Amino acid sequence: MSSIAVDPMIQLAFSIAENKGTYALLLGSGLSRAAQIPTGWEITLDLIRRTAVMSGVTDEPDWAHWYRVTKGEEPNYSKLLEALASTPDERRGILHRYIEPDEEDRLAGRKIPTAAHHAIASLVQSGHVRVIVTTNFDRLLENSLRERGVEPTVVASADALYGAEPLVHTGCFILKVHGDYKDVRILNTDAELESYPDPYNRLLDRIFDEYGLVVCGWSGEWDHALRAALLRGTSRRYSTYWASRGAPKSRAADLIVHRRGKALEIVDADSFLKRLAAQVETLEQSRRLNPLSVDLLVNTVKRFLPRPEHRIDLHDLFGDEVTKLLTLLGGPQFGPIDPFGESEYRLRVRRLESATETLARISGAVGRWGAESEHYLMLDAIRTLDARAAEVRSGNTAWINLRFYPAVLVFYAYGIALTRSERWRELHSLCVAPVFRELNNEPSRLIDVLFLWGWPGGSDELWKMMEGYERRKTPLSDHLCDVMGGWSSSFASITPDFELLFERFEVLGSLAQFELNDEVSIRAVLETGNDFAFMPVGRTAWHNTTKAQILRDLQAEPQIKRLTEAGFAKSSAGFLALFLINFKRVSARIGW
Image 1 (spheres, rainbow, N blue to C red):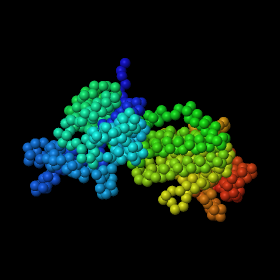
Image 2 (cartoon, one colour; image 1 turned 180 degrees about the horizontal axis):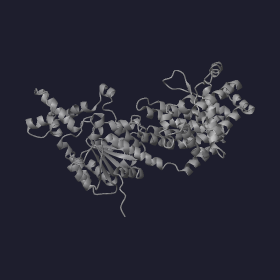
Image 3 (cartoon, rainbow, N blue to C red; image 1 turned 135 degrees about the vertical axis):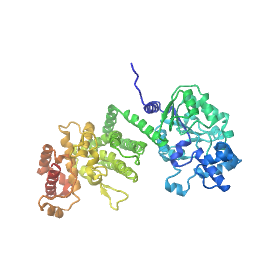
Image 4 (cartoon, helix red, strand yellow; image 1 turned 180 degrees about the vertical axis):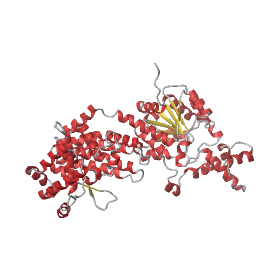
């Protein structure tokens, strides 16, 4: 029987996801290259150039060649730095300008954490990576971790190791084997890199014995003591994966063979680590709460709702779910600067739906069986999701707009559940609840920013890219109906026709949106031939069976009374009649 060939990248993602916290990262200078912090070779060439300028040589196309011809030897970072500065303090001063960003660097986005650093921070925050060994002097990794609220234990000298929190107790342990650029004890020269203090060696032996290893940005050609530590290790508890641009060089290849590792050819550290973090997150999503667990959470909400003594528990439960969702939204799998593609769009939509399902279903339970006291909890949850989505303003427009999708899903689930329980007053309150966007002088209403094509990501052209919706007249409405139908057991209970329920909610949403118009202006528009006022209309426009029933209901005196008393149609039966005329005209246009 032939074996199944598996992409080593997929093997690595599975290994990290299924063996949480058992893989360490070994990072070299290549990791920070995208931040325009130069590598040792680039610093070497620049030091050669600056030294040559002092001798009157200012224009050489190949400084390495010039050095070979002039000095009769290969350029060597360690030798050159040692020749220029005889003490560690002096060497630190030279390196400082290459690493520390000035104001111009910050404005240009240089020497700050890159996508690779943020991806690592995501893996650390989720608990998949706890130990990092790095040869880098900079603090980009520490900065990216702190941006996510993770405070790492950083060891940059043997002295610091003695007082550090034990490895087993740390959420994130960073060993900077060459030191920190602000510490005079940084290691640069060949002599300094020849060996490590005994405490370092013992710690490295333990890490390389007990943990799997992912190598990225380190060539393996220099750093004699680090290479020796890898060669000392004989354990094969977990695998070694070595990511490099092009084929590994001879010394790296020897280390890979020694550790029986797998070589991964990558484009750069940013794309490799972003992909790895996204794949691990996808595996976690695929192993998220199973339906029984979600149902258990929904049932917990149902038990809390009628009991005032559980009011705080209910609020805490919602707070936890909102926080989980916001954390996912901040992950690298939803990066706003990634290039747009149809397959990536579909993937992000599915990821967002998976991430939001639990919160949407328990929100539906609150709408179905809750009371007015929980209504404001729901408004806070939806506004919080909306506000977090609005925080990102630069990047790919499609990705920025899609960040609002979780708020749309929760808005819909709660609104459909309110419709199911005929809680018309709370439904109207949901639609017209104010939401503040920083760029707007006046508050908007939820119905204007989270309903159908009114929300930033609601373009039909985008939603036609979803599989099976390419030829739909109302692709977003149809897709939301399918998604909500799959979740409806948590809040719709037994209903003979979920499509009817869904479309009734959307028609009432259209009515609430239509309330922006004044009655005099609408009459003037409608008296002009077949003209109509703009308003969002969903799948009811072409779904004639449900449309006929919904319109009959809206013309029945008891329903007119209930809706107008709840605040719909500006509490005016006459305004509701105008809406129905306008709705029929918009529907006729969409239904063509």
